[in-house]
Length: 182
Image (cartoon, rainbow, N blue to C red; front, side, top):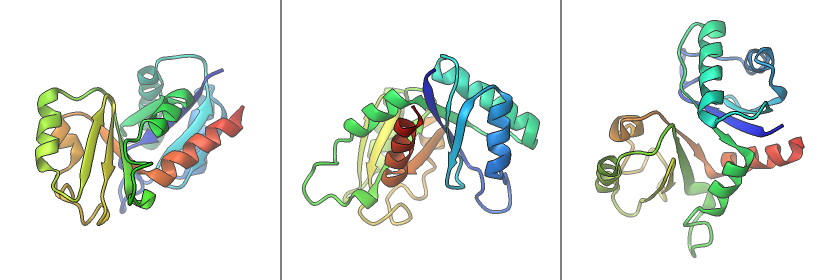
């Protein structure tokens, strides 16, 4: 069975949309997912499931979370293979002088329009870097996310699609977990 990595957007930030990871695992298991694991409290889930499109997996999870927790959550899913390609395709990993702790990947529910990408690029000011690649956008924020030129520009509004971002360490940890799953 394929291995999926699902990323929940906007949970466990402040007092709203609180999700305990043990209950989230139970929700996934109720959907028939196997080998369910979570990673940190920000809503990262790895599991095995019957072969489905990533969008179908996300929709099943969104519906279940609404039923079990009582509020909507955007879920963006990728297969283990897709996550491996995302890691391989990071344009800055091997660039000299890049601090990997300052790399981030934005996972998008769909491919943004060319106009939306241009808008994002126009809002990104040096020393920050942005690289759009289909349903992912790679960022390098040498001054941290809160010190970036995009701090006051929510990505979902700029791109007009659901987006969730993870730091480079989390992306790699999730991929590593998925390779150990089987």
